[in-house]
Structures are given as structure tokens and as C-alpha cells.
Length: 265
Ligand SMILES: NC(=O)C1=CN([C@@H]2O[C@H](COP(=O)(O)OP(=O)(O)OC[C@H]3O[C@@H](n4cnc5c(N)ncnc54)[C@H](OP(=O)(O)O)[C@@H]3O)[C@@H](O)[C@H]2O)C=CC1
Ligand SMILES: O=C(O)C1=N[C@H](C(=O)O)C[C@H](O)C1
Image (cartoon, rainbow, N blue to C red; front, side, top):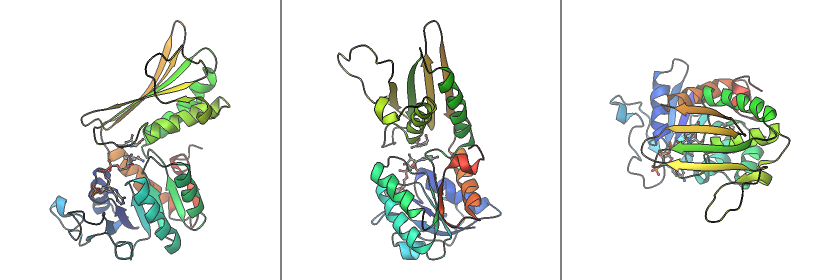
């Protein structure tokens, strides 16, 4: 697989570069960075002490010249720019970026008519299996249980709630025949009044180097159930991304997520 990495000097980008360098079935053929970034023009694998002979480029035509796949963990505005180029040139995309608005998600769906895309807020096997547990729990606890989603991430994360927490909310709401937009409560402050029993609440914690923790609390009278996933390393997202690229190898168009990749649908 001829893969380019966007955000090549970011937390996920670097780990992806390293994993591709170590994979038998993948080769790094491109690396993207933002204009004016100090890393531009340097070797994407320089931090490993073993060059990949691939320079970090801001020009998409240069950075993606040989790419069949782009793995993108950047920011919504960056991903959407890359998306336009990839759709026009038939480059398959694995999108891990979070924080898209509805228009951004619609643009990804439209681009998937021209190229094949895996778009998922969490590439780890564990989180995606947890989604199935949540579906089951949500059906069983649809009455009499208050639902709260608590997530914790490192101090550098810029979006809240996390994409994973939002997906958990969507999965739970759908399992209960509801729409997350109608029931989500994203913040509480001051005299809030009693909890609306139909709501799904969110709380976001930011601090230190927390990789990514998610807990869903089903709080009833006399008992509470907590379903928790904790990431201790980004390596699970990296492995999931490469698995997603392999999944796309025989697809030319279409929008998929990690439930499709892992056969969990
Ligand atoms: N789906 C999943 O499994 C996971 C998703 N994520 C998501 O991936 C994204 C990146 O996370 P992380 O690696 O921690 O973040 P980092 O900030 O470490 O890396 C982001 C990279 O993208 C670059 N970038 C920033 N803005 C733009 C832009 N407008 N256009 C192009 N490139 C840009 C940054 O360059 P510079 O530093 O020069 O600004 C940096 O290299 C986040 O949205 C996060 O939520 C993270 C982990 C797992
Ligand atoms: O920004 C991160 O770090 C992460 N972002 C993703 C999200 O928003 O859900 C996935 C993971 O939790 C790490």
C-alpha cells in the first residue's frame, strides 16, 4: 500500500510514519504538513533517526503525487482541504480527525461517491467493541436509568466532547429509538433544575498526557452500571488505521467506518 500521512509531525502522524516504516505491506510515499511549519522540507522519518526519503510537503500535488491512500489525523479544516484533492484524484482516505460540523460530515459523505473513505472517531478495536456493549446496555436500560458520558483526554486536545464520546451518545440514542441532538446536554452550570430523565449528559476532562478514557454511566435507583474503555497508548489507533487501509484495498468508492472494517456491523 502506497500511503501518505497528513499531519506527519503530529502525535498521531509520527506514530503512523513509524508504523508504516515497520509494516511489510505498506510504504510511506508522502507526508503533509501545514505551510510555515518548521518541519516542512525535512524527512518525515527524521525523528526515528532513519530517513524514509520522503519530505514533509505543504503542496498537496507534491505530497500526494505517489499516494494511493492518505491517512489523515489533523484538524477539520485541513482534512476538508485534503478531501477535495483526494476525491478529485481517486486517493483513498482514512480519516481519524474529529470535531467536524454537519457540513464537514456532509462533505466527507459526498467525497465518498468519488473515492473510498474510512471515517471513524476512534480506530481502536476496543472502543468499537465497546460500542456494541453500549448498544446492548442502552436497550436494557432504556427506562429508569440516567445516562452520562464522561471522557478524559490530554491537555492538547482542542475539541470537546471527543468524537468517540459523541459516537457513544449516538449509538445509545439510536438503540433507544431517539436522536442524540434532541437529548444531549453538553454543559451544566448554576441552577440547572433537576435532571431531565430523557437526557444524555456529557462531561469532558482535560489534563496532562491522558491518551483517551471514556466511561458511560447508567445510573438507576439502587445500582449503577459503568462501561469504561481506557487507551494507554495511541498504538491501537495506528494499528486500526492500517487495518482500515487494508480494508479499502478492494474498494474504489464508498463511506465506511471501523464497524465495517472490523466486521461488527
Ligand atoms: N480516530 C481516532 O482513532 C483518533 C483521532 N484523533 C484525532 O486526530 C486529530 C489529531 O490528533 P493529534 O495527532 O493528537 O493532534 P496533533 O495536534 O498532535 O497533530 C495534528 C497535526 O495536524 C497538523 N495540522 C493542524 N492544522 C492543520 C491544517 N489546517 N491542515 C493540515 N494539517 C494541520 C498539525 O500541524 P502543526 O503541529 O504544525 O499545527 C499536526 O502535525 C484530532 O482531531 C484527534 O481528535 C486522535 C487520536 C485517535
Ligand atoms: O484527540 C485525541 O487524542 C483523541 N481523539 C479521538 C476522539 O476525539 O474521540 C479518539 C481518542 O479518544 C483520542
